[in-house]
Image 1 (cartoon, rainbow, N blue to C red):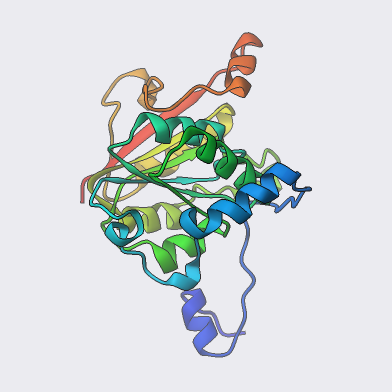
Image 2 (cartoon, rainbow, N blue to C red):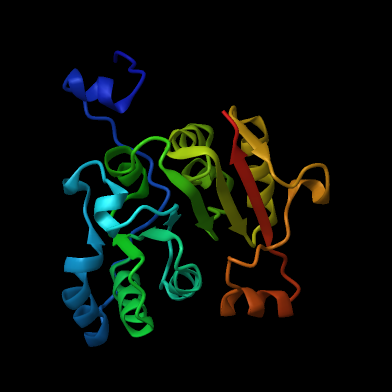
Length: 241
């Protein structure tokens, strides 16, 4: 079979190549409250790739630094962060529908208006909806570490993905990762250290890791892990070129 340099090139030739997903979609069951939150809030806070490339000023009705988070789970810490930083716009991406509902319910209760969400694959959102050089910060907190060696190819932090992120960040924008799985932290560090166009904000100290910044809320899951002696590693890399 002929080899292709990209999915786009393959599609142009009429060939479909299946993508390796970094997530498994677990649909779960919506509670009544989650379903009601989606129905009531999606018109004002929901985004779709069908809208095409977003103009953040139009989406939020203002010009402000925009932060994008991939995989916000049930959304509690994402909403907390959004409420504490009214000067920023926040876009969250999640594929778990109950998480979307829980996030929108919490956002409604908190009265936050600087939050928007996608229910879609993050790689496709970045490609189809986020303009180049537009993001102030991109956040990836506690992604699936895919522990087994044969599954490491499913880890979202890979060289190609990092370069996609680089194009979406403004110069000086940051990519902030956090994980409680040390082998994955080491994998992230290895990928980011070799990535063109990025600089580690940790400088020379702490083996390249940074203390948890105040803007990242600590979750109940994280507190429970710390009590059990589990570590958490934060990495923040800045786009410099």
